[in-house]
Length: 187
Image 1 (spheres, helix red, strand yellow):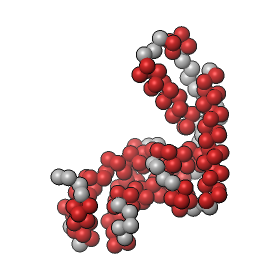
Image 2 (spheres, rainbow, N blue to C red):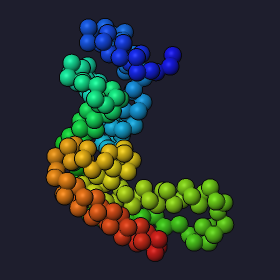
Image 3 (cartoon, rainbow, N blue to C red):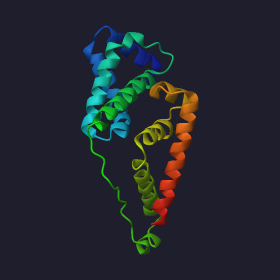
Image 4 (tube, one colour):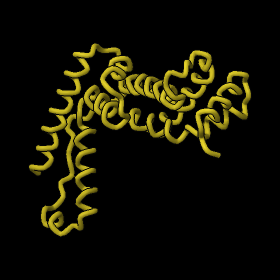
């Protein structure tokens, strides 16, 4: 079945009437994307699953507030992102932060002989490692902006910050990431 605007609108109308089969169909269509979105923020598969399911429950309960200004998927994604950020912040209150974060350094002699594909994946893993080392607020805003694709105005709403603060935070996060990348390449 092809997902069309008319098709999803019909399903959403049935969902508002409490049709469980329509809710299951909507859930099946969006669950993978919403799970991945949540996982990128909360960093734990079990928590991401819980956040995703709670987000669907919230979406179905508040479906009457869906105006259709954006696609249903974008509206649902906003709920997932907000719930994921909230859950991540809650979980951070109780986690201990290690004193030192060490990067495993590859032997330079093996890096020279790697095929192009392995070299590219090595770069990606180094970049992701650097992103993971960023301060929570920096990692959060860069993930939302560059991976999730939210623009500055949307970030301001999601994070409840001013436009100027958003621009400053992204600028500082990018600079911090640049420094971490340079340090990782020195090894």
